[in-house]
Amino acid sequence: MRVRISGTHFPVETLGPGRRLGVWFQGCSLACAGCMSRHTWDARGGSLHSLSGLLELWRDALERGADGLTVSGGEPFQQPGALAALLSGAASLRDRTAPGGQGVGGPGAGGRGVGGRTVGGPDLLVYTGYEPEELTEEQKPALAHADAVVTGRFRVAEPTPLAWRGSANQRIRPLTPRGVARYAPHLERRATGARLQAVVQHDGSGPAVRIYGVPLRGELTAVERNLKEAGVSLKEPSWRP
Image (cartoon, rainbow, N blue to C red; front, side, top):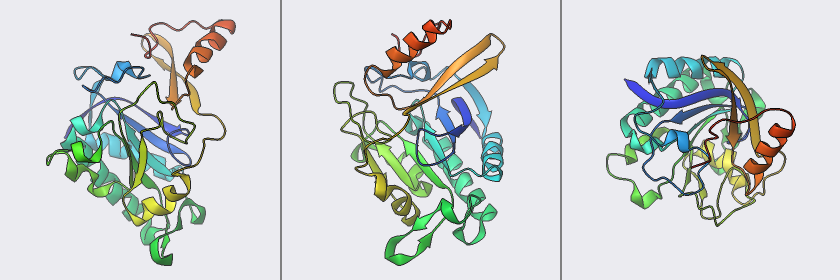
């Protein structure tokens, strides 16, 4: 199976707990005003990757102590078959690599689950602009192996200080005992520390600055200003129309 994605990165530290593999799907027709990732909207953009290649990145991340996988976009549910296959494969690989639910990340990687059962190991988190009731019968099966999902359109006029969310309407929804153990403490937690993570990557056209996370209003403008003062000018920042 081939998956059209915008990019990947490890470790991402601003889209879920701990150090995570980030996978950004390409293509989004929701086109939320103020989105920082307009470069992921075009369904013909990005590049095609094999599912096996993405799972190899996940295997490598697990070996390096990843605390989880975050899938965002773009809109992952606009490639529902690919999303379902990625999450299914990622869950299977995690569970084979980490027998007993302990997880590659060690005893501290999990938490206390439902009914007192210990739930450990890396979690699988999905970001979507859809609300649960909007998902079609074709899209719903993709959540079968997700531990938690962040739902809701980004609304630029409704900023929030809550961790890992861009606007006040968005919700973290745990879906499994592991998801409850990992995310229940954060449902109403205000973000602390950096909300953005800047990474310099090099490709054929030269260096590119990638910014991962969920900014507060004005933070991206401040990033541009600080980079300019440091002698770095951004060309075609993804949050500009």
